[in-house]
Length: 201
Image (tube, helix red, strand yellow):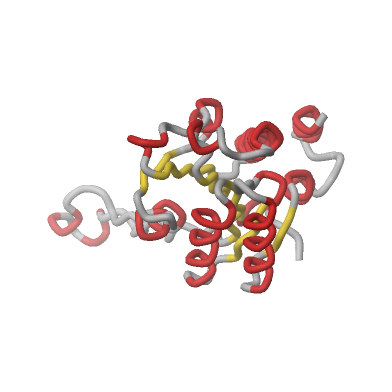
């Protein structure tokens, strides 16, 4: 099964300066997160961010934050109890205006339901805490979760690897930044191919 660009959303978890400072692979991980976000923007994929206790840990990397449609502040380790589902599954909008006061033939038809994008591409820090708990709760919500391993980090390799093992066991797909970007495009004839290729080089 390949990722479908029209079914994808990108969630970037807790790339905060004070948190990132303790992570051994921070430069490479952050560079891949930026590539994902830039590629998502080029390809029309919604991008969301989360920040764990931002009053203490600060905001996400400014470049990433600028690419997100919205950044959720959270105190739970998982972003799901903090409203992430509301971003990923927007409620359908009803007709505008006071429809009851109009005759039926003048009322606007009800808005079509928003097509759900159920493939959630997830990357972030720390892999064994906030990323893991968010991924598992999204999977419980019956979303397809794709974890971008080279855009995730923990303070220790053991914690990171244990998170990946657990995520794979729970049915999450483990992928890399390049896998995601090339699956979203599918072809070297894609109009954004040169721009995406430039991000990777």
